[in-house]
Image (cartoon, rainbow, N blue to C red; front, side, top):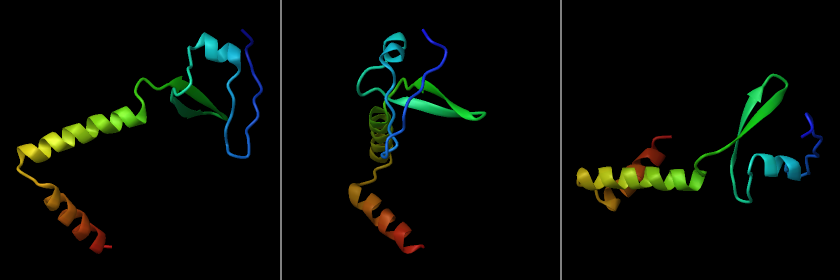
Length: 87
């Protein structure tokens, strides 16, 4: 495997990972990458959990807490309306 690769950034900010890298690091369509600034560049790592599945976990935990505290969806809606008026 080469030690450096050149990729082009499109007008939408997208890049294509070379096939050799996708194969070597088992990147699949739909995977998420974490990017970390490092000096003048970036370090990329495969995300172990997708943002969507992480959101579902957090939402389930929040819903469980609401049920445990006896909160209804109307209570949450009222709190959101109140918070929006506090600007």
